[in-house]
Length: 309
Image (cartoon, rainbow, N blue to C red; front, side, top):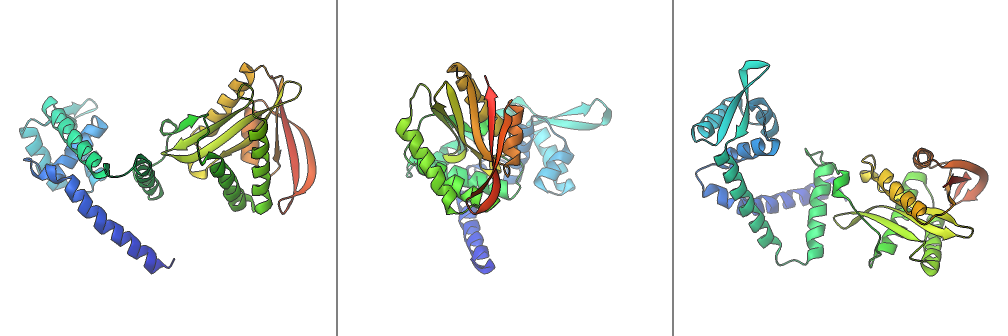
């Protein structure tokens, strides 16, 4: 799409969003406080305590204008000033009990209006809207827009579409990051088919990490003969890396292996997956083999790591 088309799409969304936001915030104008005054109250409430400088930097408003707003809110008994211990000439701000009650009331009204806005949509669309908004905030670098581990759900039950998502994620990421061709996706498809055909619920398990319904990461344990197990399909979507998700998935997989009393866990990877290899080593895996191979359009080394339990 051309720059003109992208800009046109963003402007169209902005027009819609501005109108929608006006509807959602209409209750604010029915109160005695302006939108900016409520934003100031929200900023104090969100941070528990803050300073006038912190509010000004967060909301990008004029210092004199903010000073007048704070005087009004303090006079109304909504905001309390507290001298800073290290500098008695400066103060930090908190909400009074009255201010907190107003924030609770407005939060409830906003929640109800958003529920009304979504009420005609199926639950799956709720997830899509929330995920899209979170992704937009992340991409634009909005404060608080980065994903955290507590926003990820990890489950072990397979649902319709999961298998296709796992295969597609592998095909797309390995093509983008390592240049693997379509044969790698076919390889993943074959290995997952083998897993599904021979799966034993007591000895095999697959963990899926999702964020608002979107697959964020995956790992699996497949039993092998001689009380061994193979760790498979360990992969984290790039935007969910660096938050501890890989470590969390590996920890659950290893705890499962110990609970099933496997004697050894092994995995097959390549010399190109250096980041994953570092995590394997942290978990106690040791590289046992490194064999040259021609795979998926590349000349590489296929490596085998093992962990004695």
